[in-house]
Image 1 (cartoon, rainbow, N blue to C red):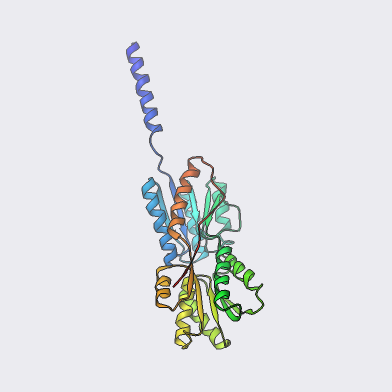
Image 2: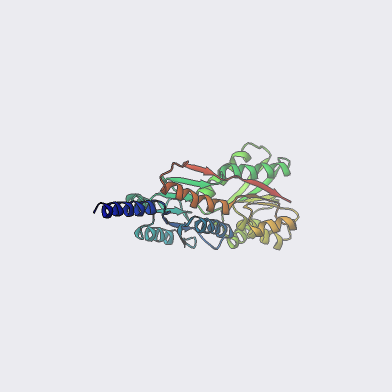
Length: 295
């Protein structure tokens, strides 16, 4: 009888030890603003690769740059019982109710690249203010502090557009010989960048440079500038360092871009998710380094 009891105890101990040694497969949702932008494709790829390495069940949802679609997608992730939700917001204000729903269900939320207008567990992003300042300083240096500039803004309401514009204007406001003659939103879109730039070329003369809050808009602006026969007269600087932008820099049509690291953002998102769910402490803000890329 004693042998039977001892055997049961040993078997129970082995089962407990076995369960304790098994890594838990966390369910993590990643809500992307749009997979039409190569930058966010790279971000998702980095997250998916790391999730596979760490044994995380990652569900990626694409909002197609529509705030209402993203709101519904995040709500669905909450209903599905995700252990954590990471969000790259289409609109930092519009996503707040979905984040609050996740909070009510005790589901931690990480924001990636773009912030939300509410408290979250952590935020992973480049320092967009610094990036805007880097672009401004480069343009001012190339123009020797004299010139007329256009600013193409991203999607209104996004932290990326607000912060990149903040850094850019902070530098330019201090330079007496520089004038930002117009700032217009082009929604981080290549087609919008081209369309808005066409209108701006009709409205203004003697434009020396364009700063676009992302490369997609910058590349669209270049198409409009080229069609107007002004390629050699107007300098264009973008932000993100997507592949098409790097090719344009090599070709000499794009002057410069500020390089982010989207795959690194994706990797850090999944790694941080695992750390949080394992009960570890993480920083509230994790900055991803930037780099100025020129020919």
